[in-house]
Amino acid sequence: MNIFVGNLSYDTRDSDLENLFAGFGTVESCRVIMDRDTRRSKGFGFVEMENASEAETAIAELDGTSLHDRTIKVNEAKPRENRPRR
Image (cartoon, rainbow, N blue to C red; front, side, top):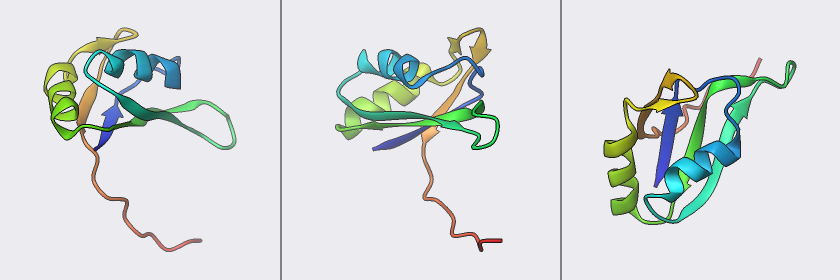
């Protein structure tokens, strides 16, 4: 299951997300989305968990909690929209 994590601090790294979610089950991958030009976090990321029930527990437990002094938003990721390229 793919999970969206929003309102992240600019200091949050992939390893921070992995450590946070590992307490709920097997984490397949974690990625904080970075701006190509500035190489700074865009303030959101994605976590993939192997087991759907573990992912749902993580979402329920972590949504609204604090990470690096920011209240994070955690929910199931929506499919990416196809946007026309510029």
